[in-house]
Structures are given as structure tokens and as C-alpha cells.
Length: 72
Image (tube, rainbow, N blue to C red; front, side, top):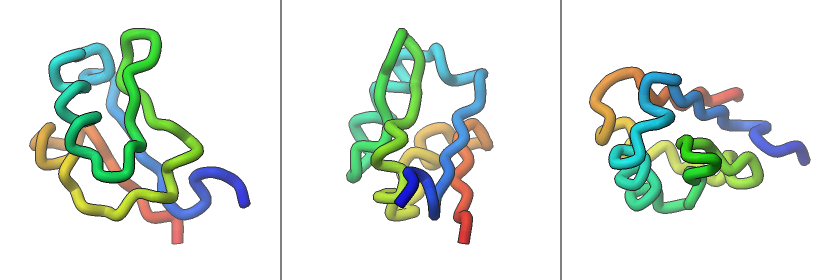
């Protein structure tokens, strides 16, 4: 099964390089889909479908900086 078959997470460029915000998002995610790679907030593609749609990451950014799309 391909990664991200059911869930896609979009991180807007405006927060990708904000290390402080990235650390908070990484810490709050219960399924570990976020990582700081090359000094940018990214998703771990292999864990995308583990997203529980809890919105904890969205609650941290408080705007549309992170968008979670159900692909089903």
C-alpha cells in the first residue's frame, strides 16, 4: 500500500522554517508524523496514514498553516 493513501498533510511554507513552532508540533503529534529535516518542518511520508485527525497540530498553528486532507 502506498504511503499517504488515505491522508495528506500540507505544511505551508510560512511555518516550515519556524523551529520553535516545529518543535511544538513534533512534540504534540501522537503518531509521530512530523520531523525537523534540513531545518524545516516536514512530514514522515511512511507515517501519514497513521494520522488520527486529532487536530492537535492545527490547534498549535491556529490558522491554515497545516492542512490535513482526507483522501477518501
